[in-house]
Amino acid sequence: MNQNVQRKDLNKIVIVTIAIFASFCLISLFRSILTQEKPHFDIPQTENKEIYLDYAGAAVYKNEQIDKFSNLLKNHFYCNTHSPNVCGLRSAEELRKARKLVLDFFSASNYEVVFTSGCTAALRLIGESYPFTNSSSFIFTEQNHNSVLGIREFAKLRGASFQSYSTFDDIETKVKTNTQTLFAYPAENNFDGEQYPLEWIDQIERHANWNCVLDAAAYVSHSPLNLTQHTPSFVTLSFYKIFGFPTGIGALLVRKDVITKLSPIYFGGGTVYSSLPQTDYKIFYSKAPKLEAGSLSIQTIVALQFGFEMIAKIGVTNIQKTTTVLATRLAHTLHSTKHQNGKNVFEIYGNFFTTKLQGPTVTFNVFNEKGEMYPTAKLNAFLREKKINVRTGCMCNPGSCLSAVGIDIQDYMSHMTGIQTDGLDPESCLDIVIGNKEAGAVRVSLGYATTQNDIVVLVNALQEFLQSNGWVGDIHLD
Image (tube, rainbow, N blue to C red; front, top):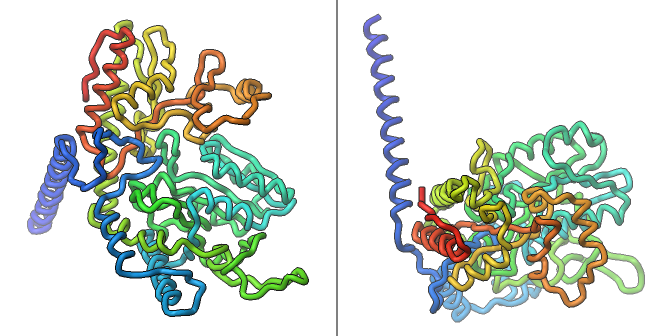
């Protein structure tokens, strides 16, 4: 009896000791992150020493990646992988290695890698190839990127229905579960960094006729994605959002058991085993090649190895921890900043002040003491003068943007009706004002090379902007 009691007491002591040690380690990690002053990464340095806070747009590459890639091309020649000669076979082997790197990175042995020019091209390929009919459906959350919304055009062409939902709740009860259904959502909202449960994948995929598209572009830039834990039918991503270089290369990851569902309309070099010009005759290759029309950018693909190597040295979980701490501190600092009349200076979007999941993106708008919003274009121009890179606008995510700033979609459509787009460029969308509300915000997104000093520089710049507009106060980092 006494021995049992002693064992229980000993176990309690061990558990408490481990808990205290773990807490100490976590506190030490946070302190080391928050006191970091200089980046330990050999990244490109502009002559103006810019601060880069747009990792949701693209990551920063390391000089080491460029040096290794340059040396590789100086010593090895790569050519068309479709040519069965010495160079072609060498290039095909590098292509095979690159596919394996991608699969290993995402623990995705049950998937095929289809190389594309980016995440958008991967989503378009799904839309073109998915077997939509007049009895099938395309459903998606309203918080999706424009590139996901574009899939509905393919659904419409084939007579399929489409519907967006503001929340995931009750989706299964609102859609006929026995119909062929494609469901799409982002692992992370590119507008404000809000993350959504990966368990949704399991709920969707349990239906035999349902397939889930996971837009992982924003999420995988800072967080690990293990495709043995959750197995969507399709995953789309861009590699430059993970490690900066190369651009123009992304991937569609297709689960092996559903790749036969995809039937591309267009065929080109490398996609067909045989075809004839005289009649409607062609035989597609199976698996990934049938979806990779034309010669792949092999020089770009061989560069991926140096990006994966760089990320492996840093560790994705380390990036996740560091960026989370810095983003949380910034969000709480801005949230606690007040005008003399007690009104908030900043409105923060996303999940920082809830128990829901949140990525390292702080999206906000700035208001004067009367509650009037400062134009995002004005603030962006000020930050550009300070050599601080952020993103402003709706970030190609109209559902999240309009909901965040409180613009009714009917008012939005009425305002936009009749607008001529000839001669306009994407920057033109930064000044859409409806009533007293602007369709836009400021997005600060963090990545592997972001430091505490970067946050301090940004906060000081925001304080200077406010003071130049008559604000009396200081922003204190929490």
